[in-house]
Image (cartoon, rainbow, N blue to C red; front, side, top):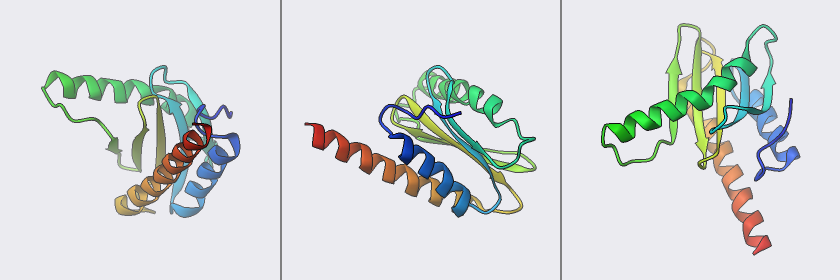
Length: 139
């Protein structure tokens, strides 16, 4: 399934997902998710038994709930990312602006949190640079 976010070209979207697989030890899957609707925009999973599409559909809900909780607690800061750990996996939810999030999961015993965060941040920064350059060329 691939319908990349409007600000990201199809080839860039696919390249990000492929790079994440190559750069993260224990990579299980990654997806771009519409943060408002929870709709998976692009999904790439190396383990067919893992329900990445289903989990991706709930990612938007999880992030929206956490954002509401922070605002209700009077926290004025903006949510950037969330980490969920389970016995088997690390799950990183990285907001890319206000409408898209990048969800990445990896086997906990095969990777480190530092590696996961570093690779995801690098790819998020590259996407931000591409988007910024595209807007500057249009303007």
